[in-house]
Length: 444
Image (tube, rainbow, N blue to C red; front, side, top):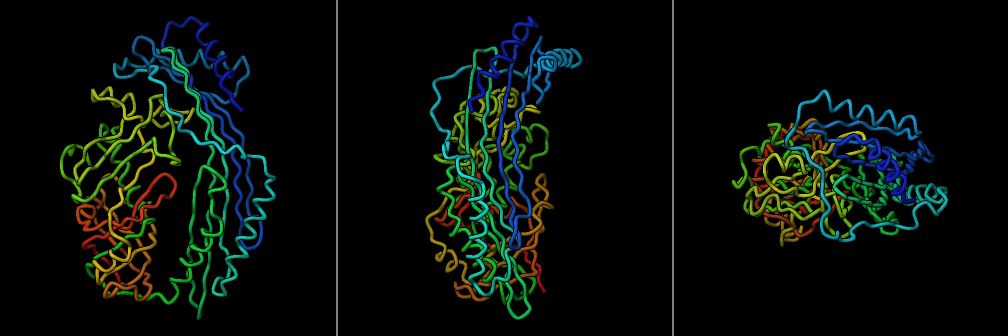
């Protein structure tokens, strides 16, 4: 349901208070259903329907901000009063500004009109069916967990510059984790997918990949400590890109918590590496006509041929650096925006996955990473557990586990020697397979 008129009424009420300030109303309404299935039954079932509003005023360069999810008349009156009072106690900030209306925006938002029409029991039956499919493989002893979620999100921005923006989006996700066992050995493997259209979620393929990921790890061995060439699969490539992506935010740079501060227009990675952020990508999970400031989204080349070309900006950080916003403002109704990636990915190369293995010859193929949350995004240092496969003479020989890889994200990305043509997205982050020339591996 389009709540634009509802938030317009609140905006009009703020205007009528005659506070003589620039005004912005940011509204968000979300509806979500999430189901968790584990070992033959529904473990968790959650539905939520939320709505909230953030009010920002700029008066004499001072910013006041308050938010609420209580929309009775008395509470809205108090919200306006508290927002105005907040501004009185803050110092003026010359960089703050509100978005202005721009050219007609392209229609980029993707909506599945089937959202909410089917009984949720059908989705539960689907999870049960996928469990049965996984158990057809005799080495799969149980589905540790599977989950399905669907959400409908509406965002509304109205301000006193005459800007009105409204977006409506759907997202559907499915993931499954399977336990495989053979000769008293146990391994776990999983897979997930996120789409904007329910019909594009391939439940069967995702389940089969999860089964393969678990079963292929059976018979895993340890390997000796040393420096190895490494091929990262797409999922692990996404994990490392997610460690790196906070450094692309101009907010992090301005706060001196980005390892890329002072490196603009310098070579920081392998010359074959290109990293792109694209808020306009067709069917991208984070695609939108506008960001959370109301600025049109765009395609931004962050790293080109190993050279850092751009940071990601919202209106505030762009004004501070005297540049244009890249359309990367991100916020909820309860906070102010900071720049963050939209659809961010490593551009694909020209080589097939098999060609990467042949080029590596002898080394490791990494398929799973554990403990990335312990890596340091500010310094870029990481030491994480991994699973994967030993590769000899360009062919996968046997699975390996109980090993750790360590290094620095910049050094690792400098040591990329080849990039695959198999770009794959996990949510809004994408990566192809990547060949790293050398990486420290701790094993036996």
